[in-house]
Image: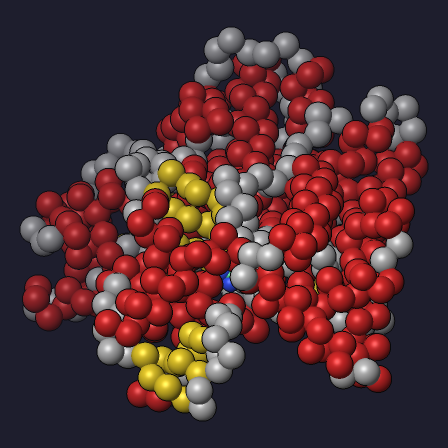
Amino acid sequence: MDYKKLIADSISSALEIEAEDVLRSIEIPPKQEMGDFAFPCFQLAKTLRKAPNMIAVDLKEKLDIPEIERVEVMGPYVNFFLNKSIYLEGVVKKVLEEQADYGSSESGEGKTVIVEYSSPNIAKPFHVGHLFTTVIGNSLSRIFKFQGFHTERINHLGDWGTQFGKLISGYERWVDKEKLQKSPIEELNRIYVKFHEEAEKDPSLDDEARQHFKNLEDGKEYEYNLWKEFRELSLMVFERVYRELGVEFDSYAGESFYGDKMDEVVDILEEKGILTESNGAKVVMLDDYNMPPTIIKKADGATIYATRDLAAAIYRKRTYDFHKNIYVVGTPQALHFKQVFKTLSLAGFEWADDCVHVGFGLVKFPGKMMSSRKGDVVLLDDLLKEAVVTAEKIIHDKNPNLADKENVARKVGIGAIIFTYLKNSREKDIIFNWDEILSFDGETGPYVQYTYARAKSILRKNEKPEQADLTLLSTQEEFELSKTLEGFGNAVKVAMEKYEPSVITRYVLQVAKDFNKFYNNCQINSAEAELKKARLQLVEATTIVIRNALELLGIETVEEM
Ligand code: ARG
């Protein structure tokens, strides 16, 4: 039931004004004492030639809405108090009916949204920053799908570029083949770091590496085969991480995929007359937009990162005819994407406006740095392992007899990390604090999972009510909880519009808080039989909403912990 609309319609017919206008001005009061909805009368003073306070008094007299228990005039405001029982019944029934679909919509039907995320660089460690894009992108793709869109999840692997020349040179000199098979990325990264150290002493190494990359671009077999091996070994490691996180992709078309699609980019830009020469390089000037030029081809004829992104965008439009093309990439690359989108738009592609860069902040581990060239990174594998081991200790202390502790610890540990990443608006930096992240109370993943498990255990211990008279629910705690449950669909919509999973993280925290308040203040087991049935249904509705919300964040639930 859309109460806001119901109220707006009644006001509109009582005052003979446009329902649309009324709907826009209805507010949600900041305090419960002021009701559930409020309608300010100031803006009507002119048209009705009456003082706002008087309009409010008259309006109150004219209204009669069964779903509204009470209407109160407070100065220039008319405040509406919902009939709690009717409201509660409506919300709980809807959740129980719709189950896993509760909160979803069909607004995206027939449209495709591309969510590009993760996109790590081959032969380099998957670090904690890549985890940020991975969990945001995973969540966004789930949110869009829940809104009815078809989604295409793309991992734009960093699998092309001059660094592969360096790797080949380093490989020839220093590789330990056994280590390469055992922990490929570590070994490749060691070689890469060593290359840089050695090249500082002997610059001829750089020339050799450049030649290797040139050969690779020209399709020479020797370089190609090595590159292919690096790619496959790296992907194996990445896929292990993705499996652990429950993350999937529809495509791994990375930078190398566009190798044969870049000549066309150059042709298109040339045809449009926007390609110019600058110190031997081919560029698109963006002075008029206060940006440095987009380099399309370097003086030596090599294409770069931006050229590949232009080719990728054009390819995606052709292949998927996207409604939105979303790039989940750290905020330091904001300028790069602005240049790419502007270049597309200058080339006459109107859909450039449907390309969206979704940025995010930095991840900080007090005391540790994150630069892969220096080799002192916080590896994702270590991070996840640490989370699971710590979660297992905590769970063991709390509930030593729990069955399947390992599996629960895995879900809680990984869930805690994902939750931390998605808790605040994405542009904010994250500072990791283990004690905080894994705490069972506080704004954490374990807190929400624990709330869910607790609710589930209540349901397990009682017979499932066939029928319940939900109008028996009437306490303030029950009302607050159901109001929060009712807001799920809107939270999903806002999260989608802002590309902001944290809206859902915040939302599910609120559900958990409201549930715990209800649980602490309203008896379930000792309640009178009929009331107990109704409360059990409210508990069940809560578990459905928590589960649906965590699912959108990419976090698993546990039945017991
Ligand atoms: N591989 C890049 C990195 O690790 C991110 C790629 C972002 N996506 C893109 N279409 N440029 O920094």
